[in-house]
Amino acid sequence: MFSYYGSKSKIVDYYPPPKHQRIIEPFAGSARYSLKYWDRDITLVDKYDVIVDVWNYLKNASDNDILRLPRLKTGQTIDEYNLSDIERKFMGFMVQDGTTGMRRTPSYFAVKRMEKKFNYIIKNLHKIKHWKIRLGSYAELENIEATWFIDAPYQFGGHEYKCSNKNIDFNALSNWCKTRNGHVIVCENTKADWLPFNAMVEMHGTMFKTTEAIWSNYPTNYDAQQMTIQF
Image (cartoon, rainbow, N blue to C red; front, side):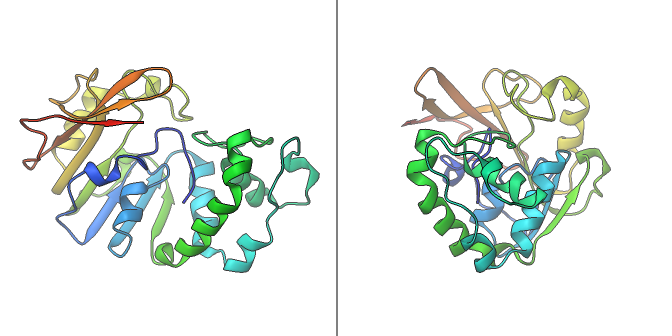
């Protein structure tokens, strides 16, 4: 629904489909996996209160709520408009792509795509009305049978996250992932060593190249092969 640092929007189709009706994302972010399978029983959890507030805002928003928000032009700032606190939080994601939110001035690319982004949100609002969205830590979650899509801040990289990887005990997270009931999908890159990750997709960005990796408690297409896409 909105752009967020570390979003899986470009590669979500490469992940295995869920094996359960219930999907849980303990590090929700922009929840691209849940949005792809939106009609399942979705639970989003995140420690970053801004993410949780924005998701709950969108869950309860009407088309008119989104339509009346400003479409900023180059040189404008959010401060020029009489917005509520939650509207400011949401607009912080709209004015910058790949951000952690709370930005005030739109980028050149965000201005060009802003109307398209708003239209996309309006088109998809109905998909999230039944979702459960809560503030909290992954460690607090009940171990129920579900498809667990786990996209934690990466072990190496991901310093833009508000919930920094410096605060994560990756040994504890590894054990937690391996003991989930149901279907587990864990996202990382090939530099990580806290689970036996398999290379999945090689991504060529504007500045550097990374290889996305996956661990699952079920066999995947990436156990013996690697795919390449260009960005």
